[in-house]
Image (cartoon, rainbow, N blue to C red):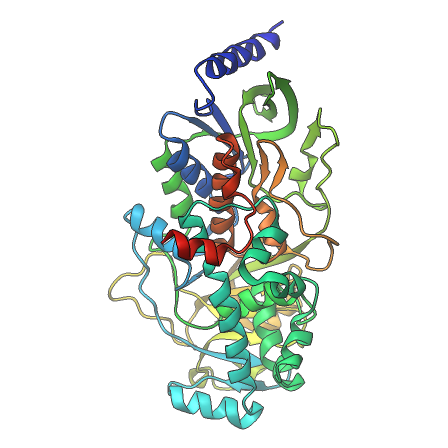
Length: 494
């Protein structure tokens, strides 16, 4: 009987809304996950539906998800997504809106290590860097840049579409609206194939492109071209991060939205239909026990995949049944090591002469992807990066936890090692089709978009799309969903 009471209350509210006319906003919205996707979609939903809608955000872990920090020696360092591209427009907006600041950049040089020696070394002189690239690889780097810029120019159309209120019910529809068949095909062909077609050499792909993809995705140039292009775009241009930690964006958006954060694991979403409107029962468990509540709209803002415990989330009462749990994720281990770098391993017997703060790797050595001399999330005006002969905090990214012997290879000695293990990105190629945002009338899967490309800004784009999709569907504004030839439509609307 206790179960019937909330259902009765929800039905009464729904009937009252129906009696008031079709324009009544939703009463309650559930968001599952409080990472950047969940916190951004809560913000966008409130922006569209107004401040009176109640938004419950369920999070079984900590707010921020894959935006997280680790404390070393009373200083905090990024253990998740470390920086954002200057073209991350939604993230830029969030930072302004929340009154946050960009962290001061402490410049350091990069190099690519091939297992025995450095295959490419950055200098302090821009023209010398260009000359070295040309000397080693001809005009491959220019061809790569033109290819990436063409992809990004088309992808940036999404901000214009979203500003005009357009949304997409599936990832394929969204990609098609931006780059037509070219973008969809890029999810089915590899980075290597696509770059060879535009005249980039195999050597450049092996040395440089692979190193960037390993650092960002932990995957090779055999991964799909669209995700690869987005990753390579992130390696060019200016990068930035948030003073105090990138996760402040998530907690800030939830606070601004006045979202009700419920620390619990969602176990199921069950469909109840009434008077042609869908009503969803969200069941969850926490330390107190099991409970549930009813919602007009539900957004899943956590990955649904085979090796994720949140895939224990089940869907009941749907015909046909919802079965979107497929594909695997790429595990990534981030080790924050406070110690002395073994510069001899990289060919510098005298540590004082070691000039690099960021080391990427080709496919060899395979035990780590990249190594960074990182700065804390709070940087004072007097802060300076540690010299190579001093003990510093290094961030090592690897596909598996590092053995003691591997740590000894990279470091002469160390004081501490702290580890964060992430299901960081989709394992591209492990899923045969692109998923849909709309799983049911008002049930949405925000993380669908990371099966095309995975980054913090991509999650923010997905959040805006899902908020618009929910809004347009709620008010039956079907002219704003899955429209073709949007570039022409948007131009005529301006």
